[in-house]
View 1 (cartoon, rainbow, N blue to C red):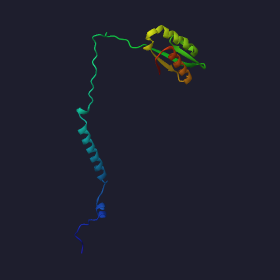
View 2 (tube, rainbow, N blue to C red):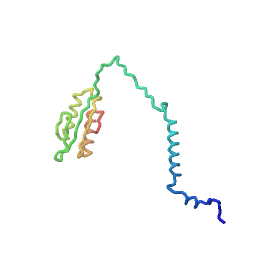
View 3 (cartoon, rainbow, N blue to C red):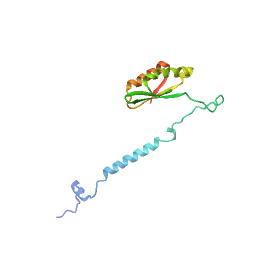
View 4 (tube, rainbow, N blue to C red):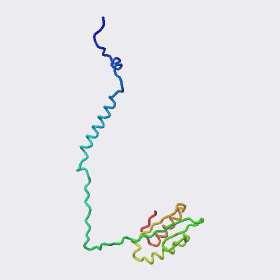
Length: 148
């Protein structure tokens, strides 16, 4: 007697199925959908930063104002010696930086506190030379020394 009942075991169900299993893909799509739904609920105009910028008082100011003076001192290595360019020196040895810095500080007078000095050492300049130049600038009274 032949059975008119349908087989219900897992192997038979698997054999009837053809194509890729779509369950993992549906799960991933649902997770992405939930993520997008949740993130749109939290991102709104109330989450944007409100910045209050200070208003400038133009009553006592002129339209043009100069910032602090900035001098660039370049250190390079030429023929095995360290040379300095800047503050009136062009291709002079590092030993001449001290008197030039002292002379520049004397000429600047009280403006030395607002003057910015930028040291630009070349790639081959040893670290000791940069420190020596920075020390000479500090001894002369320059407070704002930067290395670029």
